Length: 586
Image (cartoon, rainbow, N blue to C red):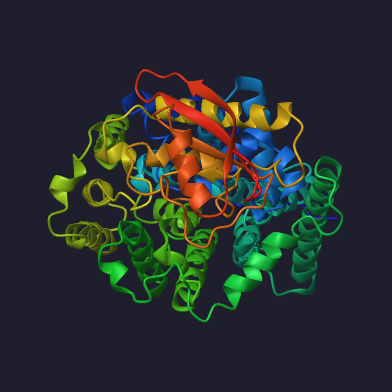
């Protein structure tokens, strides 16, 4: 069995009693923190307009698993993300189910980071770290577009917390099994996160009693047993996902087959088609600033370990090593053709170990800091970090020199901490300078809440309504096998409503079957007679022109029906047409 090993120092030094009043207050604040951000800027959870991938999951939340039966895609295999979203959408209706999922995963990530940091430090440091991560634009961006990156951060932090807590639990084996179960959920959301599995070992070693020798026979046996229980939990998640997918979708074979195939394809890229092919993005990549800063302070702390030993006990050093490994493996995967750090939605996965390392190094509150001093720094740092969320384009005034000033501010703060670690003035400076460094580091992918005045909830509601209207059309009538899956003919390029047209199309994962050039026929596109197309336009009278152009392409049309989606901002007509044989009357 797993031995229960407790830290040799007092509980107050390792974060206090789990049920202390101070912790309860902090956890309550963190649970509502995403809601406070929503009050400040209600658009931050609705930043997916204009993209494609996030809408695959939004659509699955609404109509999974019906279309997965017809056309299996790798998005529909990611059950650890789909099933909670599908349940909440069924319970609350779209888009409120997706909003609830965003708020829940964001709160869970903040709570887990707090408890993880508190285990190795103190409650004040833990709350500061959680506030700063929660207000960081890259963390908000990762959570703010119905994509699984926010869920991945939450799953990862929960797994790490369970591993570390297994040492102080009365049920250590159960905690490790649960950690493996959650880790399996992370992998089955995105298989690439397998590369972070060694961090689980570092977390386990960090949580052990430092007086126990790892390299002894007993120590190694304990690690092996822990890995075994972790593997059992992973196996349980695998079995559960396989059974659920088989029961829900009914497709034989390994349930994650398409994701594995996609991973193999990416791993064998000779040239990544989504990459720029160079590293010029580094100079303007807001999402890599904090990974670089955190790696700088982590490496500096390791090299200065002898001088900082009183500040950095060995378990904390292992936590720092967790980030060094995570950042290093991501750098390696960026040098390779997968180019992971070039894409901010992948870089966001560094957030858990990034803020864990920063919290235990530069952000650690010195013992002599009084309550009012700590509160003032906490509030000031949080306001500065999240300040760009208060108004569109507010942050751009600060980025006239590109990423130069964030790097300079952050490195200045790190330098101050390295020279005077544990001093009140140096802690105050590093907190404020890191907060200022994070101000306006808006990722390039999810920026709408920072750049535009718009009604995000209204836009998502409009997309959800159109998805449901189209879904009802294709499920309420008898269709041939070829016609049951929606295919769209939209303007995917330059219409005012293009982002919403694209969202509806991608909600059905129908981008591979659709035409993007309305009102023109896409060159080389051919549909079989009997297939149906869905046109989304602001005008009702579109059939005659569409029929004329499709007939010229050898695919005459028959009008099947129309639906009107009334909205004060963007009313749309949804027109359904059927492809006829070229010789048929029309």
